[in-house]
Length: 115
Length: 113
Image (cartoon, rainbow over all chains, first blue to last red; front, side, top):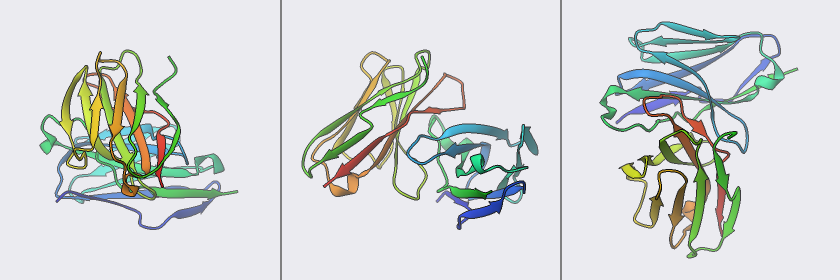
């Protein structure tokens, strides 16, 4: 069955450092992969989408990579700030989804940036 | 229109009661989704509408759950005979046709006692 795994432990880093979050998937051939941010008590907010033919995507301090051979996406936040503290969710969408439009999410990685 | 809205934000109910939640999507979005999220997990898909047609339902959606989108605008999710296992955050999202990005509402937190 399809499986999505994100960093199993919460991630604490010092302000100013680069945070790297991992998303691994199995039994999947995603056409693209999305990353969302979720703050406590709120709905997820879209951050970035990367397609299978793209190796890397950037947006301001965010960078996403997508390695279809390793079946892995890495999400980087450079020059991290306490305001970046949140849970980050990855959502690969497979070509085998057919007509389905829903997202399938990993369980998320809780990031805390310490001042 | 400032985004997806959901009502109520919190609902406490006794086991066996029926509850109904409402979602108002972004006005020009014709796709609407319902997800359920429990603590420490990512959102899990429940059902999806394109306009007023319900096109996809998850196996998670037991026959106690029903969703409607009668005029292709707002949607309701009803849970009949609630069980303690139904306690969760219920999230609604919307998107444009052909769009990959989904816009989520703030969710309705359901507690079944």
